[in-house]
Image (tube, rainbow, N blue to C red; front, side, top):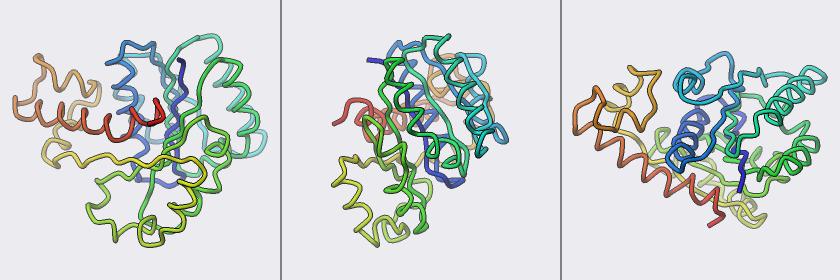
Length: 238
């Protein structure tokens, strides 16, 4: 099965890049032919970590109108030529102007390429994050969708409108949406990971890692939990 994994959310700082990285790591771990679309060209943190590991296409998806249409044409032409079986698309804030506005083009193109669309909608704390989840056109047309809470934001449900106003979560689930979480990575270890931008999480958790053994084990445990709670259910629909 070929997959197009889209890390969406429309707000900055909700964990889109982290989910993209987790998906890339799982694809590599599973032996897939992984490609990345870095749509957040201003920050570019997913590209920075994996550009020496897998094929990365940088396309600015913070566009609207014909500029957005041209960007989408560019990236899908590239994907058609590349023939990857596991594509991870990291979106910038405000990407609804491109991805949701042109979802009716993206969905049939992905289908013809044999790619199942799996959208992770990253849940932020504010009300707009909860409401936009159910309005996203690409989520509506996706083969599978999951609302993902990044626990780096908070350990407490009461800090999220998604939980305090449960009607939005209930609507999501009723429409076939899944729910998942990314557990928080210890801040000390997270800081250490950021020091090594050009290395995958798996390499930092491996025997040749420059990190301490305990830090490697914490990363390995975090990866496994993150995959179990979010990436694998999104890909497999469980």
